[in-house]
Amino acid sequence: MSEIDSIQEEEREVLSSIYDGDECFKQISPCTFQYKYGESDTLKSFLVEIKWGPRYPEELPEINMELFYNKHIIAPLKEKITNLVESEAEQFIGMSMTYSLFEFLKEKFEELIQTQPEQTVELDMNKLCISEEEPTQGIKKEKKEQLTKAQKRRQWNRLDSKGEKPRGWNWVDLVKHLSQTGSKEETNPVS
Image 1 (cartoon, rainbow, N blue to C red):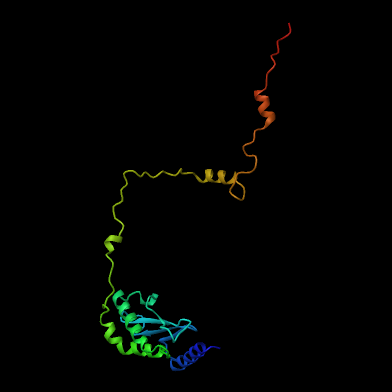
Image 2: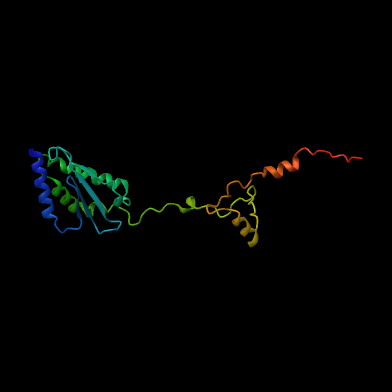
């Protein structure tokens, strides 16, 4: 086990012991951690994801704010949070920093969330609305043929179990056909 792997394993254990029972903390994978700030499911809350690279802590971790939970957060705020965390992380290069970054954001949370609007931006629904009047000039509906019950039953009885006509339904009876079209000998009465 390399030195970097042992440092990462040690930090993983420390994080799990510190945040044990904290519903805001979640370990997604051995190298990915999330922390939720603010009240759950409100507009004044966000989720930060920190992902360790293969050389962490000798390199900066990846800070991700592009999560589904953060869909209500405005883009400038996401960018500001990411930049703040990255600048804070630069002073911890070479040391375990995930806990320090999560705690740094806890301290800055109130200041950061003030730029987030109270209400979500509503889309103009008039643009998305289908017009109430539909042009019916060029479109004519074809009327279906109305069948009686007896006609429907006759059609159904002509079909097999698969809804298809039976094999040979349109075959011609050869004997009958030839008897109708064959050459007729003219018989002259013998006198």
